[in-house]
Image 1 (spheres, rainbow, N blue to C red):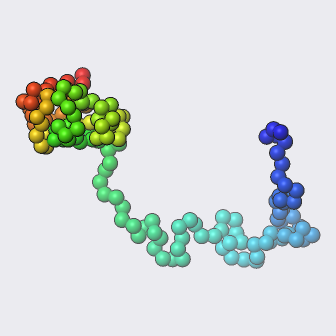
Image 2 (image 1 turned 30 degrees about the vertical axis):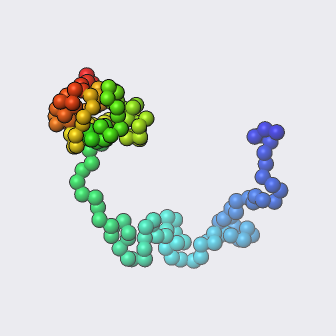
Image 3 (image 1 turned 135 degrees about the horizontal axis):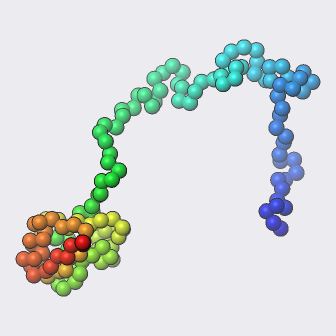
Length: 149
């Protein structure tokens, strides 16, 4: 059996009713729309979102203020205290190792190391950005920071 062989079950489909094709068709003259009124006309009826004269929901809700820059880069913040808790001395901190240790969810997101807390282990840090205080603390603990070019 192929797709071209598929057919709907017998009696499950009906022909489209052709309206406005004379009095013998059963839907002639006014084509089932009645005599007069808004809905009898072409394009008649109420538009989407019309609520009977009540102010529509789209107009009742507040509009979002300000501007959202589509080019803004959102960094995932990781503090040095978290690195101290999760890493052993001499290890390298990069996006892959952060994901492996469950600190971040995706390696595609840029990471920034911040200086909250203390660090006692010498680590090699290779991330997208690092704060000045975090860099000072890592280097004071004997580690080194390799920033991307």
